[in-house]
Image: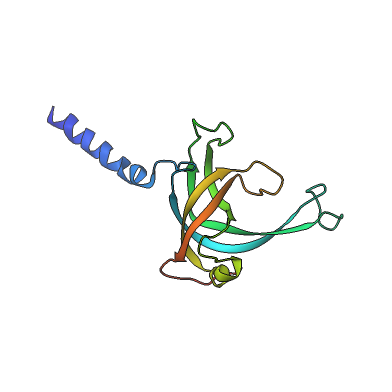
Length: 151
C-alpha cells in the first residue's frame, strides 16, 4: 500500500510541469483578454483578388501582434462564426474609434516593442482579416522588459 502511494505521488509530480504549462483557452468578446507580444507591420494583398500585390492587388498594411506564447481560443456558443482556434501565435490588431481621440500615430512608438495588450477577440470573417483571430485593442502598454525587435 505504501509503495503504491509513493508511486502515485511520483507520477503526479512528474505531470506537474505539463499541467502548469496548460492554461484555459481565451474567450471571444465580449469578454476582455490580455496577451503579451511584440508588434510588427506586415503587408498583405487586398482587393480585387487578395492574392498578389505585384499582380495588381491593392497593398494592405496591418499591425500584427506576435504572441510571446501561443494561446488557444475557445469557440463561442453565442456566435457560430467565432470558431475554436488552437495554437494561435499571431493576431491582427484592430483599432476602432478611440473615445479619447487617439489614433495609429499615437501607438506607432510601440512598433517592434514587447507590449501587453488587452481587448476583445473575434474570428476572421472577410478578406481584410489576415489572421484567424483578431484583437480589438482596448489598452496597450509596454511590457517589461521592453525588447526592441524588427518591425
